[in-house]
Amino acid sequence: MFEKFRLNKAREKVKNAINDNLISSQENIEQMSKILRDFNDYKYHKHDNFLNLCIFSDVVNIDLTIMLERIRLSERNSEKKLYARVLATVIIDYLENINTLIGRDCLKELTENKMSEFVSEFKAINKKFSNFRKDNEKQLRDIRNNTIAHKSKNALILTDKIQNIDVEEIYNFGMELQEYSTEFINLSTKIIYYIVDYMKEGRKL
Image (cartoon, rainbow, N blue to C red; front, top):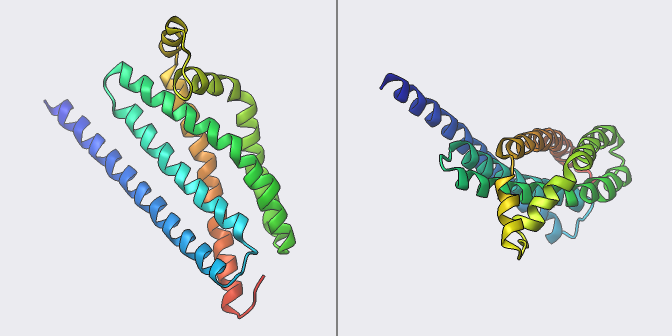
């Protein structure tokens, strides 16, 4: 009984930490969305790509957090595999977009805005995303394309692929991606403060 009590307390602690993370991410989305809308109202578009990337990453961070929680707390094997399939889809979709959002759009925008002191950090994070995609894309794409997003019409192939999913491996993929996403969010916070301080002085980048 005492062991069960300790387990329930540990789960409650994890749940509270996750709730705090979700609340923080949602607040970031609302704040960044307001800034982007305000800038658009003033026809000021120099930070559109960066702010879009911030919002996009926080949305994905919420998805990752929820899926990781469900995998860890689920007790049914079929339920764990379902959440792993959804998580694989979230991961590969994010990886398909992040290189363009950072590499093509955001780095170009930072350079044009003479914010080159942040470029090397952005490139380092983008490299981590690229390497992660290179190492795991085939497996993640196979899960997405054959077990959830499109699903194989061959029932035997479908069931075999679902049964062969390594839930713990997909969970670890999600944890690794969330680590990189958190690095980006921390860097983006520095840039937001930089922009705010600059504009407080009555200047526009």
